[in-house]
Image (cartoon, rainbow over all chains, first blue to last red; front, side, top):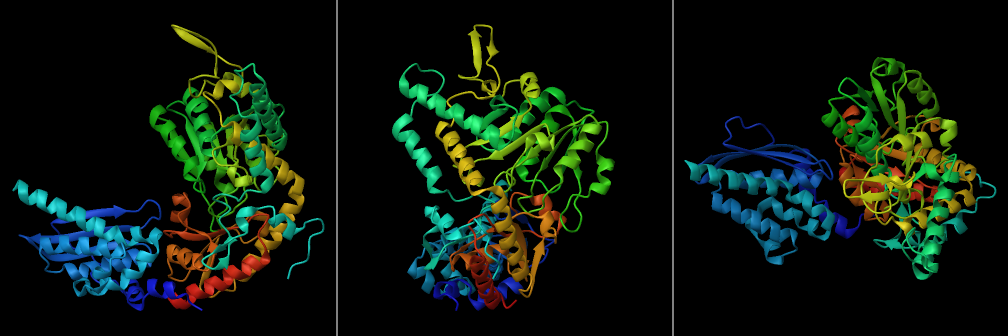
Length: 151
Length: 414
């Protein structure tokens, strides 16, 4: 028998993104690239964005790791295609809210498939897995703005 | 069901470990993370409590009664570990924080004094990071080269190629006795002879051996041997470096401070006798007392019985696990060549997911690279799940592991 909390963690949608990750490819024309590595478990994500003005024109990633880290980054890139930098900021903070068990975040449809990850909030040691891609995104947004500011 | 081992009373043995008697996520705990750290028997917990409750004082410096008792406890513990490892004398036992510090001590003193830029340090790709990084630091500072003994496809040292990497330039060899990632048991006595033939020294990382088998440093013939307290039912933060007295005598001090000096003057100091020369500052006295109690406990149970029991449980686990569809076991096939560690992967379920699912059923295993990234690279995996067994584990617990793996197979459709 599968535990109810375990069921909420391993939603079909998560396993589906794990097996068939979206946007997992090189993006040669990227404007920013960030590598995130979790030395504790060896999970790795290389996030590439093509930022055009204040929009993310394209987002792709290369990565390997557990179902949670890889599904989360796959779902995240789906939300990022064409999003403004401000929308990406909002996505990051709303996803962090979701990981902290915030109920409003769990009802927020703008999170899209990412809502399937709400069960992770019940497994504190796995939250860092789900956040790995978002850590990369935060860093990528920061670098993009620094570059834009320098130009 | 495997036969009962005469003289080995498993239920009463388990009853001596308070931490084993608890539920995790609504199921009785199955603790299979012993290669990371072992649980502690009442005897060890009591020895530590008793030291703090009755004898606590600083060592070697006081005239008063408690200081005398603390010093006696501390030095008795040293003698106890000397006999545990069959050292020639207690002075050959240096207390450290654990195996890692023991390796760093040898790297930071003997190696920095003796290894030059044309020299080579020989390790293996099987090593724990704690037996790689200290030597890389030596190589960075001295210009020496680090070389590696490779592994074969069963995760055994490829000794047929040893002469390719071991030679006149080799100054020191440092190898694990038993691999923490694969459970491989290395033929240390044989390798030691070959290392000595080329005039090099050999250090053994015994973190995974000390808990499971009698370590006889004289019989092994090696030059340095390190063990950790916490993996052999003792407390954390204590371990031992053994070395032959003449080596310890010629080595530079490790850290400076109290306890390790003879006379301090404005322009320099002289060192205390071995082993105190290597023990700056107030040592982990209660840790030493606890580690000695752990040695008493293990020898009280008897390493022959421990080995026989572990072989039964690990043999049963290998048999059961190899029948799980999609499960791959890493490391040697033969029980003669492996210890209590079983590293595995299951289909495309990531080891972290395996570990989370097993934990939800009260089964504690480790997942990741096990501080052995060169091993992971050798087998071309990012991580493995690792079930590691000890004297208190049972075949019923193996069944619980296999049952929990069925849940993983259900979720990941393996």
